[in-house]
Image: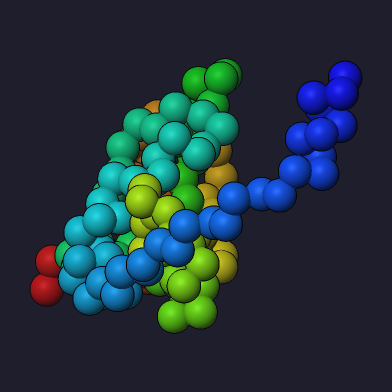
Amino acid sequence: MEKWIASIFRKKKAEETVEVPLMPAWETVVEKMYDRDLDKFGGEVIRVIYAADRSMRYVILKNEKGFLTYRLEKIYPFSEDEWQYVGRHASALPAMWEQVRGGQGKSIFSCEADLLGELTAESAYKLYFEPK
C-alpha cells in the first residue's frame, strides 16, 4: 500500500519529445490507407471496390443473418494541427476512412448480384468508380 501511495506522489519522468514527421503527400496518404480499417465493421467484409484513384471505396458487408449491405467511404486526411498530435505515434495513419454522407446502402440484399445492381446505379459509382 505504501508503494502505491508513494507512486502517486513520485515525479513522473519527463516525456521524451518525439519528432513528428511531415504530413505525407496525398499520393502517399492514399497508398497507406489502402485496405486499412476494414476490421471496424460489425459484419463480415465480403468485397471492397475502390475508385480509380483509390481515395473512395464501397465496402460490401454481410451481417450475422447472411444479409448484405454496403457503405461508401472516403479518405479524410488529418489537418496539420491534428497531425501534430496523431503523428507522434509510430503506427499512426495520416488519414481516416469515413462514411460519405448519404453513402449507406439503403437496402439489404440476399444476394450480391442484386446489391451490385443498386450500387452501380448510384451517381457516386458512375462518377468515381466507372472507367472513363
